[in-house]
Image 1 (tube, rainbow, N blue to C red):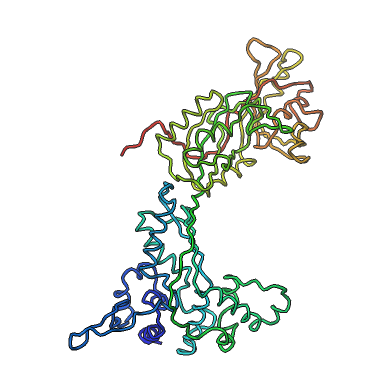
Image 2 (cartoon, helix red, strand yellow):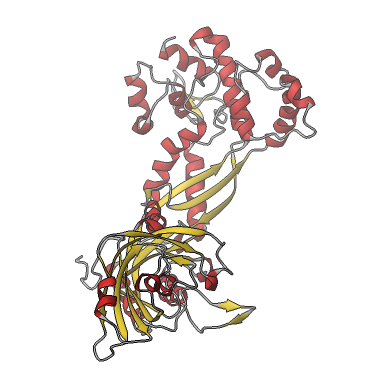
Length: 501
């Protein structure tokens, strides 16, 4: 089968030039210059200009010619008129509200389009025989063609880049033939697949059904032709745009926080409908970062690599955190804006943040993998009932790692299931607090997920061994700080250094 023969047949069926290229399996930029691509594929250019209403006769007198109908296969989806209508409708929506540099089109196509591709598939097999495969479609599928053709045009006109995670423009299309053709499809489905239809009380007609079940190898052309014309007939009306909805991207904002207060919960602390603390780390950060990206702060999800108890501080480089912000109106964060957010959070006096930045969603795996696979560094102020002896100090100088068995602490059983978890303690280093012979400052390096308070006092043997069982004496924890988390994420960034323009 020669390309010229294929194109001539498609032209006789009322197929537009863009769809002719689809059946020639054109890719990417080949749709930009139709004439050049056709010539490259050894196809003679059409003798007339599309949509021309008047031809000049040999006597230079205008001769009337019927206006070309809508493309029989795409129903005008790839026409200039539809592109202009789509562009105007996008600009007339809330598009200007979104400050996003990347977009993606999500187009809901009428099933009439799929039926017409199938009708043309049958027609081409009749015309060209076995050179047209019965399992592999002869064209670039409509959905893929939308990405190849419409996406670049709309992105260029809107001066935006393409990104599957960008501002989603949901476009709903229909056609006046849709309802009638769906009714015919229900009848066809019963005849083409009687065994399946007999076991189904209600037949669900869907685009997925058409894609999976309907091809020449599974449906006979004679059966299909009882309900639909082969090849598909010309249409008088073009495809119709019914609605446009915008959905902002999911933006992920990461950073590290330091918790400076011993009277601050990680998330809002509400018990029996009563709020126990006025504020939380989550609320402070969202309050100052969220409004830049969204008006709906309640939709933001706060996550971090672990968490502290209310009375525990987090110092050093801080704890990695991320905000998941759905339907964001902005997807970028400048350094000066990030620095202003960092300073606003710092002003709370309870939380400090740094390294604030937008990160790809794929990087959120760092938060989860870091929860139990990384090392964490603690400093605990502990009290004994008697002065610290040299023997106790020696017993609490542990450089070799050891494992413990730790039952879920009683204090968290209301929100965690009862399990016995193995945890690794990498090192313990103790020294006497200056001016208090009964107090120890103990530096502990552990596997993430270890309950440090219970590691110290043992909680009636529920953690074994514990520091208390190691020295054989009661020991209690007075204060605890997280001083390091072995997770090099997100990247370090100094937002106080302003960007140059």
